[in-house]
Amino acid sequence: MHQFFVEENQVGKDFITITGPDVFHMKQVLRMKPGEIVRVISGGGQDYECRVLELTDTFVQLDILDSEAAHTELPCRIYLFQALAKGSRMEYIIQKAVELGVYEIIPVAMKYCVVKLDSRKEQGKITRWQAIAESAAKQSKRSRIPLVRPVMDYPQAVAYAGECDFRFVPYENERGMQATAQALESLRAIERGQSISVLIGPEGGFCEEEIDAVRQQMQVLSLGKRILRTDTAAITAMSVLMLHLELYLG
Image (cartoon, rainbow, N blue to C red):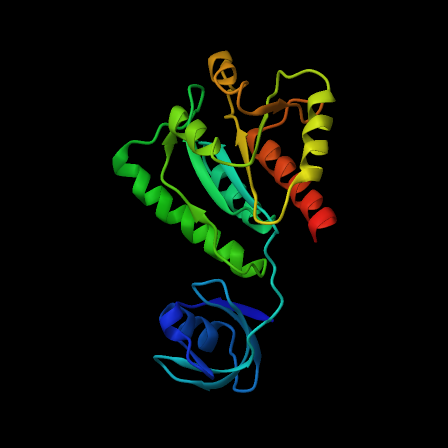
């Protein structure tokens, strides 16, 4: 079943009207016909199951069949604080994090980041990353499009992450799995609607000062004996959290 996102003003009592680029996609790419069933998510996160009634060059009219279609979001909000990564690696991280249920992605400039973005390039990157998040949300049948925030410096990121209920930092030089076991055990107490922050370091790793700055307010842990690339670390952390939340909170 194909999925589309709309704004609240496109949703009526019995009908939903799709406009913009999705009209061309539905008509010319997907070759959709009246009678086909689609899933639609409103700006407020409401899920709808709809039937295509009419396709024109400027709009598609949908009949609402069910206003409580399956909800696909995790029961808790995961904030991924991701160090800037080079090339397509950042795009890959965003795509996979969205598929795994991330709530927000916050790019972070750290000391050993290979990538250095100036203000002129940053807005173009954010626009590109947000488009990737939207595409991944559609593909994975998410009930919302995760927000990709503007790049934060490290102190800003630490302060924002500190607002979450549970706060984790996978660190490549952390030895032993005891802290990891304790972190997972602490998640047994998590409740629906609470938040988790995960801070992932860059290709060059965390500097000692960055880790020292968070030890008092975040749980520093290991993802195993091997050194993981930044994209592997992000996906591993997201996968563990997703499975835990799905298993224990449903």
